Image (cartoon, rainbow, N blue to C red; front, side, top):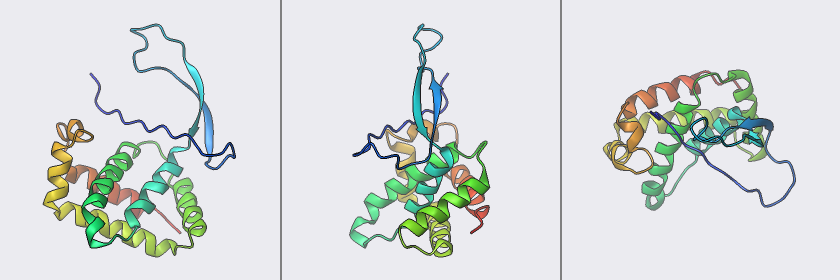
Length: 162
């Protein structure tokens, strides 16, 4: 039984080391049923991915782009929820600070905006409907409500200290 699987693979435009990463051994999802060897891969640190998702939640959008943005925000909430176990809140805080600095953002304002956006998703019937029916999130919606995801993400954001 697979409960949650969401993987993103990005291929950088340059070979320059942009994101903090660790080299880890990755086993295919079919292992051990199919005897496939593990590979070593450079994987972006979880806390950095979380920081990027929080910054995404803080971004401002035009009214016309809000529907598109809402789906991206729901996916960011799902990703943050899935990362909520076993993360280092101090490392997350340092990455949020680093990303804000690189984008000339006020960190405290970004955190407040992200918290406000997450709270707004809780009241957004369109977000709830998309979460329950989207091919990207409907599997998650079978076991938990969007409110559970939002509450966990609110806890993550509250722990960020800048």
